[in-house]
Amino acid sequence: MADHTLDTSGLFCPEPVMLLHNIIRDMADGETVEVIATDPSTRRDIPKFCTFLSHPLLSQREEGDKFIYLIQRGLVRKGG
Image 1 (tube, rainbow, N blue to C red):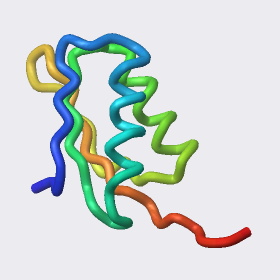
Image 2: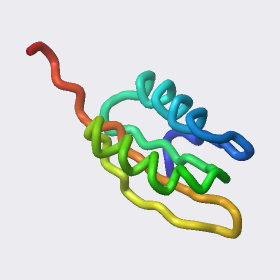
Image 3: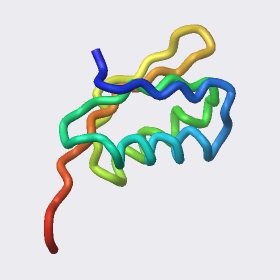
Image 4: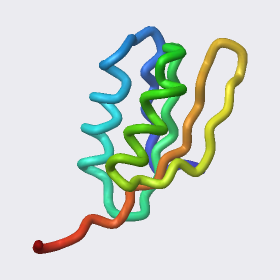
């Protein structure tokens, strides 16, 4: 079970990733967020977001017309 849920149903690129960035920024290291999306471009955008910012993508699946992702906030490095 995720610590947070972000439902971006009905929103299109780039809004789901922008909202994901906002919620992850406010989460503690190690917390998880379940993202629910209907935009097919999230199948590309969310994994790239996770890779680029080092947030583990724990799972992704499709349920009907919904794309569901479980993402963990990665550890934020302190200092240089």
